[in-house]
Picture: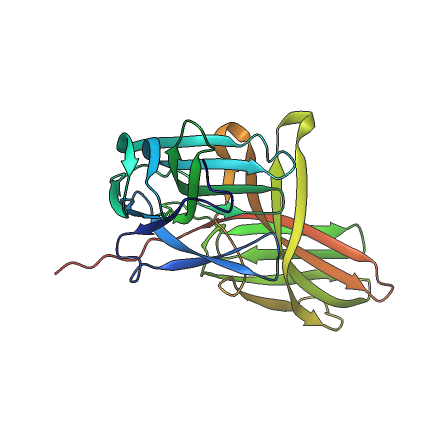
Length: 302
């Protein structure tokens, strides 16, 4: 007879050296809360233990296994996740657990090609799942999520961005940013040049926009989110004036740029939107995509 109340055992999953392991805060379905997950960098080995504590009588089972799974979940279709990696380790064959037992697991330096991401319409997650199979009762399952971050070396080519924006006979400005690719803790440095000003501008601001895209072709859905708004000018500029731009990226919740993940299932892009507002509250804007990446720390030699 199966237990009427709860599971006949407790299953606890721990990663090696978890007390010293770095953790990362990720948003939950309740945006006011954050979940702290153990962090693995790149292809770092995933190792740990599974502790099974028996509650009372022996537990008959058909086998104990642990899986490492990476999958993409579209939030409008959660019942059909899209796995991109899966590994299985058998911890024990069929038998009976008569007392508490601890198993070790080791997935080695497994490839974790994508970075963990939680967005408005898509989640990319990694987790380990323990399953105790049974013949005459439902299987016992325990899941533990972890986070992955991938580091990138400095890009060899990182051109400046120079563009012109104009309204014929009314406004002509040039803007310049020092780079087109930035690490997540970088600083956007630039200047705005006013070559012609015949409208009364009230203020100017830069907005960081995250664009999350899911699907492809006619089924593609885009959602824009304004992550930060930074006012760079208050008052009317005059011809020949230049306005400096200095925008620190570190305070904002940014991820690396992600393009065409898992055969184009989703993408995450970032844009700098330069917005001018005149005294009649008309808005003039120009967007420019920037590429964000997670910078690898500098290595030192003895």
